[in-house]
Image (cartoon, rainbow, N blue to C red; front, side, top):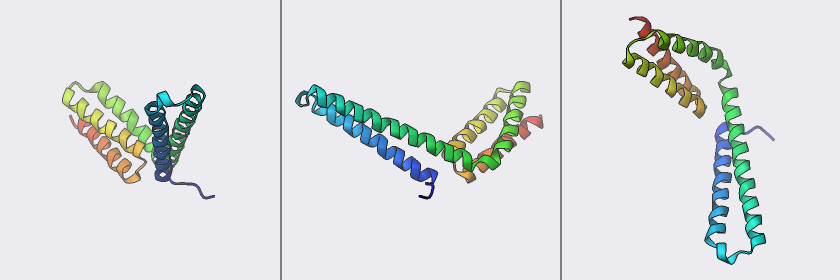
Length: 134
């Protein structure tokens, strides 16, 4: 079977999480009508579905990280530059600008979108370079 894309795995994870919620909602809605044994079985199934959703999410993250491997070295270098720049700056607005761009980079990495990662990486580099100009 071919490997799934990160988007496909995320969709599966969302589906398993939704199923877990549905089973839990059903269990609570019919709480008085369901035997203790069936309650326990439904709780167990809900837990299993939630764990599968977590496992699928972890797999999606793994796929995301594999997709950005070519950028990891550059991201590591930029991380060092961010830390250096923040450590030497005295202007709070500059620090906020660098930190904001770095938070955006982290968000882009979590999406696994190579174009968004490249754009956010570029913005972070620019923010650090502008701090060096002072």
